[in-house]
Image 1 (tube, rainbow, N blue to C red):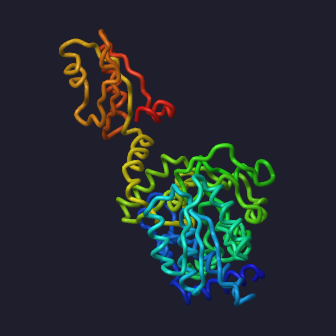
Image 2 (cartoon, helix red, strand yellow; image 1 turned 60 degrees about the horizontal axis):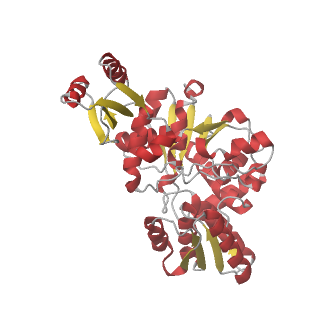
Amino acid sequence: MTQFQDLARRAQTAMRDVFDATPLQRNAHLSLRYGAEIYLKREDLTPVRSYKLRGAFNAMRKVMAKDPSRDLFVCASAGNHAQGVAYMCKHFGVKGVIFMPVTTPQQKIFKTKVFGGDAIEIRLIGDYFDDTLAASQAYCAEAGAVFLSPFDDEDVIEGQASVAAEIERQLGRVPDQVILPVGGGGLAAGVRSYFGQRTKLTLVEPLGGASLKAALQAGAPTRLDTLDGFVDGAAVARIGEKTFARLADINIADVLAAPEDRICTTILEMLNVEGIVLEPAGALAVDALEDVADQIKGKTVVCVTSGGNFDFERLPEVKERAQRYSGIKKYFILRLPQRPGALKEFLGILGPDDDIARFEYLKKSARNFGSVLIGIETKSPQNFETLFARLEAAGMTYTDITNDEALAQFLI
């Protein structure tokens, strides 16, 4: 046993005084689909519905073990890290100051307050996270507090590695393959350091936040020029220095990028089929099964579902993106003749499974033709081939704008 494995197991044991081990559940639905033994490591079932409290717990207990007088902790987060730190501040009976961007949804602020109670103070500073982070670090230096990094800290990495220690204990052996999300890299670095070469590790990033892949290509952590924040639990512009040091020699072919719209289909499937609520980052590992389907047949695979803090106000957006990705919903602009019966003619072209989800005239003053924004939902992507063929046969001009991001941003 390596020293790191021993430390991770000790952290795991110490955590049992605070919360139970999360379940390792065989999933019959996914196992049948992929011809493998698929297990879900349910980190979405911790007290704060994410694995983040593991790292917070381990970092805080080590600080206080070295210096029991340290009783003020600071972090900057708008999500799971804030909730994990709040929970642990209350557990250890210490004071926490949690900095959040002004734009943080009220639901996340409320949940953080619930977990921390009187032990924490929340400060809303900055429109962007970089401003929030700078403010938290300035306060930390001024107050002589302990800053709790969400991922780029050796004690946090060690705490997150307890996930791997639990998997090995619960399964009774090391699985053939472990699939897990990567954002700042704390969980990935911990699991990789614990398992070493004993299992195949597949890391999954959101396509719009592939900071690990960028770092592997550059040979060092590098900041992404653009960042898609949809997968808010894993969309990190720059992977951590300490975490990357533990991941720098990983095969870049084992780092996958999951399209945000496809992740939405996985969120809906897990909710509708399995009754499992996953946030976008929590669905990354399950979503990536599609990319490794040929590799995993007959093998034992563990997917880490890293979080379940899903705001159901986002459900309409998730459904919309999933339908568009699956090809069963499209938007197009139709040039409709401004004459009696033209609309009725168009409606007659629609198939029995085609439903109008959006209908809006864009140019109401046009004399001969009117531009109409139309959204159609149907049961099969093939139905659109039939619909468009009928439109063309009728001499109706249309432009499919479903995947035109610029137009979709303003019109849809």
